[in-house]
Image (cartoon, rainbow, N blue to C red):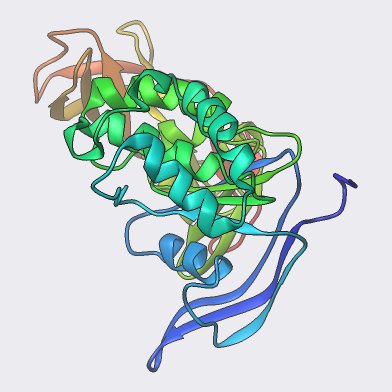
Length: 316
């Protein structure tokens, strides 16, 4: 197998629903051994893209070329009212897996998600997290060349989601398979992605390694989506975009501002600070400064945009 050759190529993909264009000019390649995460806000077309690549929705233009077979694991597990083992065997039977291989494949796939002990359980007795693991195992048992997963952790409570995220990240990786995962949560994207694709306004706005995309966003709208919530006007007229991690409270700093809002979080307080040149957000230990309080602020890092629109970012 040539891991350098894409197993899926989307070329100038266009998707429309009636007169409304959902996706335009999308170019995307998937390679064996790679996990690609498509990240974007709700309603931007992430799931639509996955459905088109899987052949579940028609395209209005462009091409999709495949070098192998595709498995799509959609958001809802949709397990049949039979045992966990029987669910996996039925999927493999439909896929054409020889009967003699099904038991070992089912066992291996369930073990990769740590649910081999559930093989004899009725599917309708599983918890939400257990059902999601079995859903993933069913797809893995098919050993396809391309695995597409649509919001695999949606609807799970935070503890179950955190536990499953770590386990699934390892299970989804395979040197012989290309994996694409659609998410809207940045933490999930960073935990899963070898390559990150940011989808905004019906097209690919950025792609690259997660660290490159986060630290060097090339467009203001990408920076805003990735959590650069602060903006300061620089002396040369450019805008400096900052994440809360780039900002700290320091009463000794000459840069002074006023707390306009406090947003309680699980472990911190997120404070919105109004400054003469703009506004920033910063996380503080509880209880944090009160609204209306004057505070000193230090900024370090961020990204500067020299102009409007598609101007390139200049890290600072």
